[in-house]
Image (cartoon, rainbow, N blue to C red; front, side, top):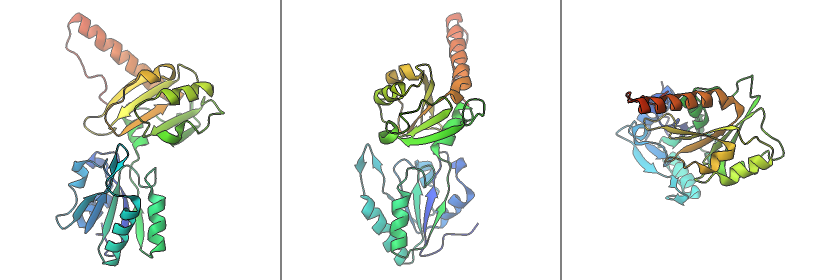
Length: 262
């Protein structure tokens, strides 16, 4: 695996958070880069893989509060590359999924800075793995839609999602508006939903619901994803069965078993 090239910027996917899910290419670049600019949601275990020679700077935001404006991120990357430093722009998940990569690529191209994109596992696929279901089960789903929370209610409202698995990134803390929009679009109140917090990390958690009851769900800590669709039905049924069995064991005084381990 080759080391980072001087004067080049690498837009690198940090994956969903588990360091073992990083690509080998991402690890090699982190270990050799001179400058690492990382998002706030990239966990310390991944950031710690940067080499001792690297200057590591957080350029992310939490709850909408920015430490560094996007234009400043562009300047940091471009100036460092012009000084013949190798730069890793480390983004949560995959760099090309809801990560402002397009703006950064435009800035790099306009400045004549060479760059490469290194894919990462996006959170939607980590969430599917946590649930243990296929997002494109051919018996129930013919497509997958990826949305961000502030746009999710604007997309596809004229069509019910009988054969769509919908994944909402950054869905916020209140799902009432999303649920109301989807119900008005014709989706069934019993449509399975799953809210996953910190997918693929050691403290991941998931909460199951239906579209009709989704507004009652209080999500766990960020990052959070919301998944809806009939492709989740079998996993939802398994969860219901596990939860019922757990309740019976509790009533009978048997040792409890973890419900959500995958």
